[in-house]
Length: 417
Ligand SMILES: *Cc1c(COP(=O)(O)O)cnc(C)c1O
Image 1 (cartoon, helix red, strand yellow):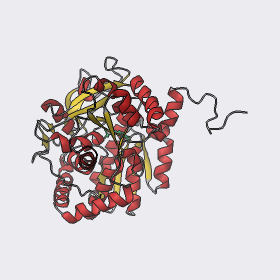
Image 2: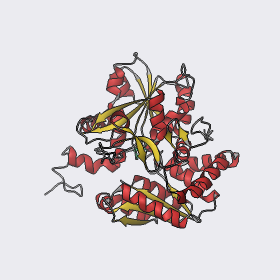
Image 3: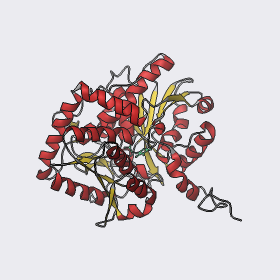
Image 4: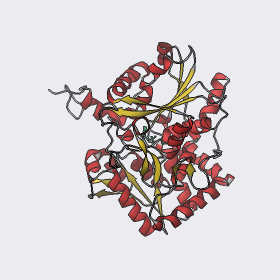
């Protein structure tokens, strides 16, 4: 089965809004580039040849469709039928590649010959460098100097894939500063350069573009559930939420169903040390409305309106805002948002590895941790789909540090003599 995407969603509206959220809060100089991008995306998704080519690349280079497999031991323990949408089995080990491949195909269609991106933890940078390498396009990734130091392995991965990693030394030397630098590059080189954004954030049309390219996850899930259960809609869908792209990917095809058909959609944010501590990344559950990275959304800010630094044990959820479409779903009651703290996520990470033989990403572990609570709310045998957004191999160092699992081995993995 190769799935051709449908790209058929009611939002955003013509102004790039999801209700009150989204839009374009950017300097005038960016508007023509965003208009050009929106027009190109509109044109591409109406072209069956583009959808067919995308589906072919997703099959051959990403490995789609990803499996929908039952987590049988978790199901048994919780009295549910827990289904896993296995984005961890994609090439490069997470959902991010769905989006970067889509945007690089769009770049080629627009005649752009150079790819740029910003990255925080490095996962989006690696996914972008991978897609650029597939199509032979030069790629520049902006990364805060502090993140370059913390995420050395991803820097090496990007360089091996042929990307140039530019350390950014301004400000706090993290994601925010890398984003500013990428925007500066884009404005300067917009004629030949395509800027690949990594989650459902940024000014219109980015939240829409990333949603459209990630929606293949939810669309496949519907078809696979029908095969396995005879129903295309489960009782609940659970996904972790950083910027929100893996969650939107699996939610969007369900969110706009008529209310009586719509399953419970549950987005799990990172509660870090606890939402009461300030050290968290729970933008919807503990944030307020504001503007970040060019769009209106829920975000974390202090009393003066300054963006607060986010904290999570998982680097991929460590973002102080959340995409405008999630902000809209939250207000409209189309999805529910909850918080899971670092400790609960780490416990789920360990239990899931032993119970299912799968190392989940620490991000994904937040979604898995919520299953225990969900089981108390649902009837026995209910079908629950978890978006297994990525694999946990990248988190082994963090686990070794936080869980003290490596005290008796050298960093190289050999036992001390
Ligand atoms: C980046 C990442 C996330 C968080 O990003 P979203 O845009 O919220 O999906 C979640 N899981 C994994 C495995 C990631 O790499």
